[in-house]
Image (cartoon, rainbow, N blue to C red):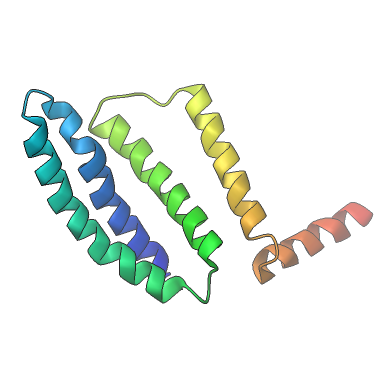
Length: 125
């Protein structure tokens, strides 16, 4: 749970670093880069420990997939609340496919394996 929380916080910082400047397009590009870089430094202070703590319990592949889904969740809220963009059907469908990727990545984990066993036994009845 610590890994997930740290990845969530790191993604808050990174989303602001990558996209926060879009509302200030009149400001100089160099300034946007420097401010974004400073925000990204804070992101690394959460991301690096998250991956260090999580690696071993999660594989590297699983950590990356978790991070991507968290990034998308954070970005959807950011785009809606900060940028004023709406979530369209095609974006929502892309999100569904990413969630399917998470299920595939964790398919052999005990919780999902137990769930598959329950589904299989229910189907057999």
